[in-house]
Image (tube, rainbow, N blue to C red; front, side):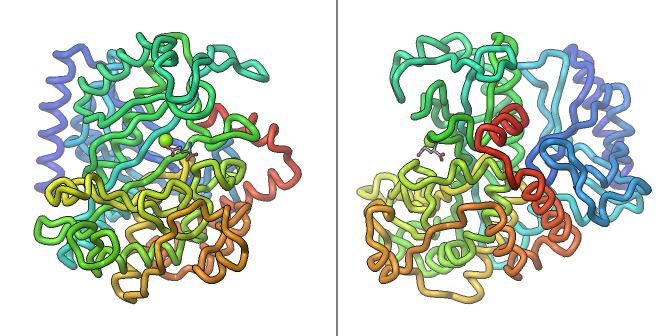
Length: 459
Ligand code: GLU
Ligand code: MG
Protein backbone atom coordinates (compact mmCIF):
# COMPACT_ATOMS: atom_id res chain seq x y z
CA UNK A 1 0.00 0.00 0.00
CA UNK A 2 2.83 2.38 0.95
CA UNK A 3 4.53 1.42 -2.33
CA UNK A 4 1.38 2.15 -4.26
CA UNK A 5 1.05 5.57 -2.62
CA UNK A 6 4.70 6.38 -3.29
CA UNK A 7 4.40 5.37 -6.91
CA UNK A 8 1.23 7.44 -7.30
CA UNK A 9 2.97 10.48 -5.85
CA UNK A 10 5.98 9.95 -8.12
CA UNK A 11 3.63 9.62 -11.12
CA UNK A 12 1.74 12.78 -10.17
CA UNK A 13 4.92 14.87 -9.82
CA UNK A 14 6.41 13.50 -13.02
CA UNK A 15 3.13 14.00 -14.91
CA UNK A 16 3.09 17.69 -13.93
CA UNK A 17 6.74 18.13 -14.84
CA UNK A 18 6.18 16.50 -18.23
CA UNK A 19 3.11 18.65 -18.91
CA UNK A 20 5.22 21.76 -18.22
CA UNK A 21 7.64 20.52 -20.92
CA UNK A 22 4.78 20.09 -23.44
CA UNK A 23 4.82 16.32 -23.16
CA UNK A 24 1.31 14.97 -23.72
CA UNK A 25 1.60 11.26 -23.14
CA UNK A 26 3.91 8.42 -22.16
CA UNK A 27 4.40 5.30 -24.29
CA UNK A 28 4.79 2.43 -21.81
CA UNK A 29 6.49 -0.46 -23.57
CA UNK A 30 7.17 -4.14 -23.19
CA UNK A 31 8.80 -6.50 -25.67
CA UNK A 32 6.88 -9.59 -26.69
CA UNK A 33 8.31 -13.06 -27.21
CA UNK A 34 8.81 -12.39 -30.93
CA UNK A 35 10.93 -9.33 -30.25
CA UNK A 36 8.28 -6.76 -31.16
CA UNK A 37 8.08 -3.78 -28.82
CA UNK A 38 4.41 -3.12 -28.05
CA UNK A 39 3.03 -0.23 -26.05
CA UNK A 40 0.13 1.40 -24.24
CA UNK A 41 -0.09 5.18 -24.25
CA UNK A 42 -0.89 7.06 -21.04
CA UNK A 43 -1.75 10.80 -21.04
CA UNK A 44 0.47 12.60 -18.51
CA UNK A 45 -2.63 13.58 -16.50
CA UNK A 46 -3.24 9.94 -15.60
CA UNK A 47 0.39 8.92 -15.11
CA UNK A 48 -0.31 8.95 -11.36
CA UNK A 49 -2.87 6.20 -11.73
CA UNK A 50 -0.79 4.21 -14.21
CA UNK A 51 2.22 4.40 -11.89
CA UNK A 52 0.23 3.17 -8.92
CA UNK A 53 -1.84 0.41 -10.54
CA UNK A 54 -0.47 -0.08 -14.06
CA UNK A 55 -2.58 -0.10 -17.20
CA UNK A 56 -4.49 -3.08 -18.52
CA UNK A 57 -2.73 -5.39 -20.99
CA UNK A 58 -3.86 -8.81 -22.12
CA UNK A 59 -1.61 -11.81 -21.48
CA UNK A 60 -2.46 -12.86 -25.05
CA UNK A 61 0.32 -10.46 -26.16
CA UNK A 62 2.74 -13.13 -24.99
CA UNK A 63 1.54 -15.41 -27.78
CA UNK A 64 1.88 -12.85 -30.57
CA UNK A 65 4.10 -13.59 -33.54
CA UNK A 66 6.04 -10.88 -35.34
CA UNK A 67 3.32 -10.90 -37.99
CA UNK A 68 0.62 -10.65 -35.26
CA UNK A 69 -0.39 -14.28 -35.64
CA UNK A 70 -1.53 -15.58 -32.24
CA UNK A 71 -0.09 -18.97 -31.40
CA UNK A 72 -2.27 -21.55 -29.77
CA UNK A 73 -0.89 -21.74 -26.24
CA UNK A 74 -2.54 -21.76 -22.80
CA UNK A 75 -1.49 -18.14 -22.33
CA UNK A 76 -3.57 -17.01 -25.32
CA UNK A 77 -6.70 -17.01 -23.21
CA UNK A 78 -8.90 -13.99 -23.90
CA UNK A 79 -10.11 -14.00 -20.29
CA UNK A 80 -7.86 -12.36 -17.69
CA UNK A 81 -5.79 -9.21 -17.60
CA UNK A 82 -2.36 -7.95 -16.58
CA UNK A 83 -1.19 -4.60 -15.28
CA UNK A 84 1.60 -2.93 -17.25
CA UNK A 85 3.40 -0.63 -14.83
CA UNK A 86 5.83 2.04 -16.09
CA UNK A 87 9.28 2.17 -14.52
CA UNK A 88 9.30 5.90 -13.78
CA UNK A 89 13.02 5.91 -12.98
CA UNK A 90 13.69 5.11 -16.63
CA UNK A 91 11.16 7.54 -18.14
CA UNK A 92 12.54 9.96 -20.73
CA UNK A 93 10.92 12.58 -22.97
CA UNK A 94 11.46 11.49 -26.59
CA UNK A 95 13.59 13.96 -28.49
CA UNK A 96 12.68 12.36 -31.83
CA UNK A 97 8.93 12.38 -31.07
CA UNK A 98 8.08 15.74 -29.48
CA UNK A 99 5.01 15.48 -27.27
CA UNK A 100 5.81 11.92 -26.22
CA UNK A 101 7.79 10.39 -23.41
CA UNK A 102 8.73 6.74 -23.05
CA UNK A 103 9.03 4.37 -20.11
CA UNK A 104 9.69 0.64 -20.07
CA UNK A 105 7.03 -1.32 -18.23
CA UNK A 106 6.87 -4.39 -16.00
CA UNK A 107 3.90 -6.68 -16.12
CA UNK A 108 2.07 -7.86 -13.01
CA UNK A 109 -1.00 -9.98 -12.37
CA UNK A 110 -4.03 -8.17 -10.99
CA UNK A 111 -3.19 -9.44 -7.49
CA UNK A 112 0.14 -7.60 -7.73
CA UNK A 113 2.34 -10.67 -8.20
CA UNK A 114 4.97 -10.72 -10.97
CA UNK A 115 3.57 -12.02 -14.27
CA UNK A 116 5.56 -15.20 -15.03
CA UNK A 117 5.71 -14.11 -18.69
CA UNK A 118 7.32 -10.73 -17.93
CA UNK A 119 10.80 -10.87 -19.46
CA UNK A 120 11.89 -7.59 -17.83
CA UNK A 121 11.09 -8.82 -14.31
CA UNK A 122 12.74 -12.14 -15.12
CA UNK A 123 15.95 -10.37 -16.16
CA UNK A 124 15.91 -8.37 -12.93
CA UNK A 125 15.70 -11.64 -10.98
CA UNK A 126 18.59 -13.16 -12.94
CA UNK A 127 20.74 -10.10 -12.24
CA UNK A 128 19.91 -10.40 -8.54
CA UNK A 129 20.75 -14.08 -8.54
CA UNK A 130 24.23 -13.27 -9.84
CA UNK A 131 24.55 -10.48 -7.30
CA UNK A 132 23.80 -13.15 -4.68
CA UNK A 133 27.05 -14.84 -5.78
CA UNK A 134 28.90 -11.54 -5.52
CA UNK A 135 28.91 -10.86 -9.27
CA UNK A 136 27.73 -7.66 -10.93
CA UNK A 137 26.80 -8.08 -14.59
CA UNK A 138 27.16 -5.41 -17.28
CA UNK A 139 25.79 -5.63 -20.80
CA UNK A 140 25.47 -3.75 -24.04
CA UNK A 141 23.65 -4.58 -27.27
CA UNK A 142 25.02 -3.38 -30.62
CA UNK A 143 22.43 -2.22 -33.11
CA UNK A 144 22.69 -2.59 -36.87
CA UNK A 145 20.08 -1.30 -39.28
CA UNK A 146 19.54 -0.54 -42.96
CA UNK A 147 18.11 2.78 -44.13
CA UNK A 148 15.72 2.87 -47.09
CA UNK A 149 13.87 5.54 -49.01
CA UNK A 150 10.30 5.92 -47.88
CA UNK A 151 7.66 3.91 -49.75
CA UNK A 152 6.86 0.25 -49.19
CA UNK A 153 7.70 -0.93 -52.70
CA UNK A 154 8.51 -4.57 -53.37
CA UNK A 155 12.20 -3.75 -53.50
CA UNK A 156 12.84 -0.66 -51.39
CA UNK A 157 15.77 1.53 -52.35
CA UNK A 158 18.75 1.72 -49.99
CA UNK A 159 19.52 5.37 -49.20
CA UNK A 160 23.28 5.30 -48.85
CA UNK A 161 25.15 3.86 -51.82
CA UNK A 162 28.70 4.66 -50.67
CA UNK A 163 31.28 2.01 -49.81
CA UNK A 164 31.17 -0.05 -46.62
CA UNK A 165 32.61 1.94 -43.70
CA UNK A 166 33.09 4.80 -46.19
CA UNK A 167 33.02 8.43 -45.23
CA UNK A 168 31.01 9.00 -48.41
CA UNK A 169 28.11 7.24 -46.74
CA UNK A 170 28.11 9.72 -43.90
CA UNK A 171 27.72 12.55 -46.41
CA UNK A 172 24.62 10.80 -47.74
CA UNK A 173 22.92 10.65 -44.32
CA UNK A 174 24.73 13.47 -42.53
CA UNK A 175 21.71 15.46 -41.31
CA UNK A 176 19.88 12.34 -40.23
CA UNK A 177 22.92 11.03 -38.35
CA UNK A 178 23.52 14.34 -36.58
CA UNK A 179 19.85 14.61 -35.57
CA UNK A 180 19.94 11.04 -34.33
CA UNK A 181 23.02 11.56 -32.18
CA UNK A 182 21.54 14.80 -30.85
CA UNK A 183 18.27 13.07 -29.95
CA UNK A 184 20.08 10.23 -28.19
CA UNK A 185 22.22 12.66 -26.20
CA UNK A 186 19.10 14.61 -25.19
CA UNK A 187 17.62 11.32 -23.96
CA UNK A 188 20.67 10.62 -21.84
CA UNK A 189 21.93 7.74 -23.99
CA UNK A 190 25.71 7.41 -23.95
CA UNK A 191 26.64 6.53 -27.51
CA UNK A 192 30.03 4.83 -27.79
CA UNK A 193 30.26 4.68 -31.58
CA UNK A 194 28.32 5.24 -34.81
CA UNK A 195 29.55 4.04 -38.22
CA UNK A 196 28.48 2.68 -41.59
CA UNK A 197 28.49 -1.13 -41.77
CA UNK A 198 29.27 -3.63 -44.52
CA UNK A 199 25.91 -4.11 -46.27
CA UNK A 200 24.44 -1.44 -48.54
CA UNK A 201 23.00 1.47 -46.55
CA UNK A 202 23.69 -0.35 -43.28
CA UNK A 203 24.76 1.49 -40.12
CA UNK A 204 25.71 0.54 -36.60
CA UNK A 205 25.52 2.19 -33.22
CA UNK A 206 26.85 0.98 -29.91
CA UNK A 207 26.29 2.35 -26.43
CA UNK A 208 28.16 2.32 -23.13
CA UNK A 209 27.74 -0.82 -20.99
CA UNK A 210 25.12 -0.75 -18.26
CA UNK A 211 23.40 -3.12 -15.88
CA UNK A 212 21.52 -5.70 -17.99
CA UNK A 213 17.99 -4.35 -17.44
CA UNK A 214 19.14 -0.84 -18.35
CA UNK A 215 20.99 -2.25 -21.38
CA UNK A 216 17.81 -3.92 -22.64
CA UNK A 217 15.79 -0.76 -21.94
CA UNK A 218 18.34 1.28 -23.88
CA UNK A 219 18.17 -1.15 -26.78
CA UNK A 220 14.40 -0.55 -27.00
CA UNK A 221 14.76 3.23 -26.64
CA UNK A 222 17.60 3.59 -29.15
CA UNK A 223 15.86 1.50 -31.80
CA UNK A 224 12.72 3.54 -31.46
CA UNK A 225 14.73 6.76 -31.67
CA UNK A 226 16.59 5.56 -34.78
CA UNK A 227 13.22 4.84 -36.40
CA UNK A 228 11.53 8.06 -35.24
CA UNK A 229 14.34 10.35 -36.39
CA UNK A 230 14.42 8.51 -39.73
CA UNK A 231 10.68 9.11 -40.18
CA UNK A 232 11.25 12.84 -39.66
CA UNK A 233 13.77 12.69 -42.50
CA UNK A 234 11.44 10.73 -44.80
CA UNK A 235 13.47 7.54 -44.31
CA UNK A 236 12.54 3.99 -43.37
CA UNK A 237 14.69 1.67 -41.31
CA UNK A 238 14.86 -2.07 -40.86
CA UNK A 239 16.50 -3.96 -37.99
CA UNK A 240 15.34 -7.30 -39.45
CA UNK A 241 17.95 -10.06 -39.31
CA UNK A 242 18.15 -10.19 -43.10
CA UNK A 243 17.16 -7.57 -45.62
CA UNK A 244 19.30 -8.69 -48.57
CA UNK A 245 19.66 -12.28 -49.70
CA UNK A 246 22.26 -13.50 -49.93
CA UNK A 247 24.13 -10.87 -47.97
CA UNK A 248 25.38 -9.63 -44.64
CA UNK A 249 22.52 -9.18 -42.19
CA UNK A 250 21.73 -7.00 -39.20
CA UNK A 251 23.31 -8.41 -36.07
CA UNK A 252 22.41 -7.67 -32.48
CA UNK A 253 25.71 -8.63 -30.84
CA UNK A 254 25.55 -8.82 -27.08
CA UNK A 255 28.45 -7.74 -24.87
CA UNK A 256 28.65 -9.14 -21.35
CA UNK A 257 31.06 -8.76 -18.49
CA UNK A 258 31.02 -9.54 -14.78
CA UNK A 259 32.70 -7.78 -11.91
CA UNK A 260 33.60 -9.14 -8.48
CA UNK A 261 34.54 -6.62 -5.80
CA UNK A 262 34.72 -3.95 -8.49
CA UNK A 263 37.19 -5.94 -10.64
CA UNK A 264 36.27 -7.21 -14.10
CA UNK A 265 36.59 -11.01 -14.05
CA UNK A 266 37.28 -11.00 -17.82
CA UNK A 267 40.64 -9.30 -17.23
CA UNK A 268 43.71 -9.75 -15.04
CA UNK A 269 43.27 -13.49 -14.48
CA UNK A 270 45.73 -16.37 -14.97
CA UNK A 271 43.79 -17.95 -17.88
CA UNK A 272 44.13 -17.35 -21.62
CA UNK A 273 44.07 -13.63 -22.50
CA UNK A 274 43.66 -12.70 -18.84
CA UNK A 275 40.47 -14.67 -18.12
CA UNK A 276 39.85 -15.55 -14.49
CA UNK A 277 38.50 -19.04 -13.63
CA UNK A 278 35.06 -17.45 -13.13
CA UNK A 279 35.09 -15.82 -16.56
CA UNK A 280 36.20 -19.12 -18.11
CA UNK A 281 33.38 -21.05 -16.43
CA UNK A 282 30.78 -18.42 -17.33
CA UNK A 283 31.96 -18.39 -20.96
CA UNK A 284 31.99 -22.19 -21.14
CA UNK A 285 28.43 -22.28 -19.77
CA UNK A 286 27.27 -20.04 -22.60
CA UNK A 287 29.36 -21.81 -25.24
CA UNK A 288 27.82 -25.19 -24.42
CA UNK A 289 24.31 -23.78 -24.70
CA UNK A 290 24.55 -21.68 -27.86
CA UNK A 291 22.20 -23.88 -29.95
CA UNK A 292 19.48 -23.52 -27.30
CA UNK A 293 20.19 -19.82 -26.84
CA UNK A 294 19.60 -19.27 -30.54
CA UNK A 295 15.89 -20.05 -30.03
CA UNK A 296 15.84 -16.88 -27.91
CA UNK A 297 18.54 -14.80 -29.62
CA UNK A 298 17.91 -15.72 -33.27
CA UNK A 299 14.19 -16.35 -32.89
CA UNK A 300 12.87 -15.69 -36.40
CA UNK A 301 12.92 -17.85 -39.51
CA UNK A 302 14.66 -14.80 -41.03
CA UNK A 303 17.48 -15.16 -38.48
CA UNK A 304 18.74 -18.24 -40.29
CA UNK A 305 19.14 -16.39 -43.59
CA UNK A 306 21.66 -14.22 -41.73
CA UNK A 307 23.55 -17.02 -39.98
CA UNK A 308 26.01 -17.74 -42.79
CA UNK A 309 29.72 -18.57 -42.47
CA UNK A 310 32.13 -15.74 -43.33
CA UNK A 311 29.40 -13.11 -42.82
CA UNK A 312 30.69 -11.98 -39.36
CA UNK A 313 27.63 -13.52 -37.78
CA UNK A 314 29.62 -16.04 -35.69
CA UNK A 315 27.96 -19.25 -36.82
CA UNK A 316 30.47 -21.66 -35.26
CA UNK A 317 30.22 -22.61 -31.59
CA UNK A 318 33.71 -21.68 -30.44
CA UNK A 319 35.48 -18.77 -28.83
CA UNK A 320 38.45 -16.74 -29.92
CA UNK A 321 40.38 -13.67 -28.94
CA UNK A 322 38.99 -10.83 -31.07
CA UNK A 323 37.81 -13.44 -33.62
CA UNK A 324 34.87 -12.01 -35.60
CA UNK A 325 33.91 -15.39 -37.03
CA UNK A 326 33.64 -17.12 -33.64
CA UNK A 327 30.23 -17.06 -31.97
CA UNK A 328 32.04 -15.88 -28.83
CA UNK A 329 34.58 -13.14 -29.34
CA UNK A 330 36.67 -12.23 -26.33
CA UNK A 331 37.28 -8.49 -26.44
CA UNK A 332 40.20 -7.37 -24.28
CA UNK A 333 40.63 -3.73 -25.19
CA UNK A 334 44.17 -2.48 -25.14
CA UNK A 335 45.83 -5.42 -23.42
CA UNK A 336 48.99 -3.39 -22.83
CA UNK A 337 47.32 -1.45 -20.07
CA UNK A 338 45.77 -3.23 -17.12
CA UNK A 339 43.39 -0.39 -16.23
CA UNK A 340 42.08 -0.27 -19.81
CA UNK A 341 41.49 -4.02 -20.04
CA UNK A 342 39.78 -4.04 -16.63
CA UNK A 343 37.34 -1.49 -18.05
CA UNK A 344 36.99 -2.87 -21.58
CA UNK A 345 37.31 -6.66 -21.44
CA UNK A 346 34.07 -8.44 -22.23
CA UNK A 347 32.53 -11.36 -24.02
CA UNK A 348 30.81 -10.51 -27.30
CA UNK A 349 28.19 -13.00 -28.44
CA UNK A 350 27.84 -12.49 -32.16
CA UNK A 351 25.29 -15.01 -33.36
CA UNK A 352 22.22 -13.10 -32.14
CA UNK A 353 20.08 -10.54 -33.95
CA UNK A 354 17.54 -7.84 -33.22
CA UNK A 355 14.48 -10.05 -33.59
CA UNK A 356 15.38 -11.16 -30.07
CA UNK A 357 13.57 -9.82 -27.03
CA UNK A 358 16.60 -8.19 -25.35
CA UNK A 359 15.30 -8.84 -21.80
CA UNK A 360 14.66 -12.49 -22.50
CA UNK A 361 17.96 -12.95 -24.31
CA UNK A 362 20.02 -11.39 -21.53
CA UNK A 363 18.11 -13.45 -18.95
CA UNK A 364 18.80 -16.66 -20.91
CA UNK A 365 22.49 -15.73 -21.30
CA UNK A 366 22.87 -15.08 -17.58
CA UNK A 367 21.16 -18.41 -16.88
CA UNK A 368 23.55 -20.22 -19.24
CA UNK A 369 26.59 -18.46 -17.79
CA UNK A 370 25.43 -19.16 -14.23
CA UNK A 371 25.08 -22.86 -15.09
CA UNK A 372 28.72 -22.67 -16.17
CA UNK A 373 29.64 -21.14 -12.81
CA UNK A 374 27.93 -24.07 -11.08
CA UNK A 375 29.39 -26.79 -13.28
CA UNK A 376 32.87 -25.34 -13.94
CA UNK A 377 33.37 -27.03 -17.32
CA UNK A 378 36.76 -26.53 -18.98
CA UNK A 379 36.89 -23.87 -21.66
CA UNK A 380 38.28 -25.33 -24.91
CA UNK A 381 41.23 -23.77 -26.75
CA UNK A 382 40.57 -20.44 -28.43
CA UNK A 383 40.14 -20.51 -32.21
CA UNK A 384 42.18 -17.81 -33.96
CA UNK A 385 41.22 -18.44 -37.59
CA UNK A 386 37.97 -18.41 -39.52
CA UNK A 387 36.47 -21.71 -38.29
CA UNK A 388 34.92 -22.16 -41.73
CA UNK A 389 38.43 -22.46 -43.20
CA UNK A 390 39.20 -25.51 -41.00
CA UNK A 391 38.69 -29.04 -42.25
CA UNK A 392 35.98 -31.14 -40.62
CA UNK A 393 38.72 -33.10 -38.86
CA UNK A 394 40.34 -29.97 -37.45
CA UNK A 395 36.99 -28.72 -36.22
CA UNK A 396 36.31 -32.07 -34.53
CA UNK A 397 39.70 -31.95 -32.82
CA UNK A 398 39.04 -28.45 -31.53
CA UNK A 399 35.44 -29.30 -30.58
CA UNK A 400 34.08 -26.64 -32.94
CA UNK A 401 30.56 -27.22 -34.25
CA UNK A 402 28.32 -25.37 -36.69
CA UNK A 403 25.37 -23.71 -34.95
CA UNK A 404 21.83 -24.64 -36.04
CA UNK A 405 21.08 -23.68 -39.63
CA UNK A 406 17.33 -23.52 -39.08
CA UNK A 407 14.99 -22.35 -36.35
CA UNK A 408 13.57 -25.84 -35.79
CA UNK A 409 16.97 -27.16 -34.65
CA UNK A 410 17.45 -24.27 -32.18
CA UNK A 411 13.96 -24.81 -30.79
CA UNK A 412 14.60 -28.51 -30.22
CA UNK A 413 17.90 -27.70 -28.46
CA UNK A 414 16.09 -25.11 -26.32
CA UNK A 415 13.38 -27.59 -25.33
CA UNK A 416 16.08 -29.89 -23.88
CA UNK A 417 18.18 -27.23 -22.14
CA UNK A 418 17.08 -27.36 -18.50
CA UNK A 419 19.43 -24.60 -17.26
CA UNK A 420 17.60 -22.15 -19.53
CA UNK A 421 14.04 -23.50 -19.40
CA UNK A 422 14.21 -23.75 -15.58
CA UNK A 423 15.26 -20.10 -15.39
CA UNK A 424 12.51 -19.00 -17.78
CA UNK A 425 9.90 -21.10 -16.00
CA UNK A 426 7.11 -23.20 -17.52
CA UNK A 427 4.90 -20.34 -18.75
CA UNK A 428 7.60 -18.65 -20.81
CA UNK A 429 9.07 -21.94 -21.97
CA UNK A 430 5.75 -23.33 -23.24
CA UNK A 431 4.84 -20.03 -24.83
CA UNK A 432 8.16 -19.75 -26.66
CA UNK A 433 7.93 -23.32 -27.89
CA UNK A 434 4.37 -22.87 -29.19
CA UNK A 435 5.19 -19.56 -30.79
CA UNK A 436 8.39 -20.69 -32.53
CA UNK A 437 6.74 -23.88 -33.76
CA UNK A 438 3.81 -21.89 -35.18
CA UNK A 439 6.26 -19.64 -37.05
CA UNK A 440 8.20 -22.64 -38.36
CA UNK A 441 4.95 -24.21 -39.66
CA UNK A 442 3.81 -21.00 -41.28
CA UNK A 443 7.04 -20.46 -43.22
CA UNK A 444 7.94 -24.08 -44.01
CA UNK A 445 7.72 -23.57 -47.77
CA UNK A 446 8.55 -19.87 -47.91
CA UNK A 447 11.41 -18.67 -50.12
CA UNK A 448 14.08 -16.37 -48.66
CA UNK A 449 12.47 -13.47 -50.54
CA UNK A 450 9.09 -14.24 -48.99
CA UNK A 451 10.62 -14.44 -45.51
CA UNK A 452 12.41 -11.12 -46.02
CA UNK A 453 9.21 -9.49 -47.29
CA UNK A 454 7.32 -10.79 -44.24
CA UNK A 455 9.88 -9.56 -41.70
CA UNK A 456 11.56 -6.49 -43.23
CA UNK A 457 9.13 -3.93 -41.84
CA UNK A 458 8.33 -5.78 -38.61
CA UNK A 459 11.68 -5.15 -36.95
N1 GLU B 1 26.46 -7.47 -39.76
C1 GLU B 1 27.15 -8.54 -39.11
C2 GLU B 1 26.13 -9.47 -38.47
O1 GLU B 1 25.24 -9.87 -39.09
C3 GLU B 1 28.16 -8.05 -38.09
C4 GLU B 1 29.24 -7.14 -38.61
C5 GLU B 1 30.20 -6.79 -37.48
O2 GLU B 1 31.10 -7.56 -37.19
O3 GLU B 1 29.95 -5.81 -36.80
O4 GLU B 1 26.21 -9.79 -37.34
MG1 MG C 1 28.74 -4.44 -36.73
